[in-house]
Amino acid sequence: MINENFVNLLERMKKIHESKAEDYSSVGHYENFERQALVSSWFRSDIDKAFTGLIAVKLARIATLLSKDNQPNHESLEDSFLDLTVYCGLWASYHKSTVIKTMIDDHIFVYKEVGGSFCNTCNQHISRHKEK
Image: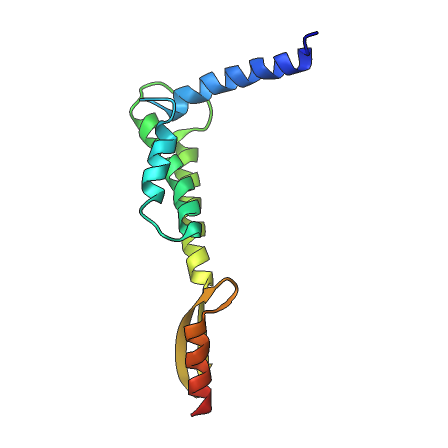
């Protein structure tokens, strides 16, 4: 017995895949994934890789859209640029929010937060300065 709901879902998936493939790839089916992997490989931090993965996909989409004369089936070029700027802004915001400034005895120390708390080296430095 055929599950009509499942078959209909597969048909919808096929249509979406075909129309989005026109917008997202000009060379091959895995072009965006390969570009994303390349850009992400430039970074060590998992969080930087997460941000750059999204940014790389947007850049790949923009490159594909700019290389074609026809209008995209889905997201416009302007929307892609806006998404790219949002991802870059969020990435910068993330890095800014993880830098902590601490003032001890009229000295300002800047530390990088690691997993929600100061790293061991920063904690030792703060402790030594407080003991003086």
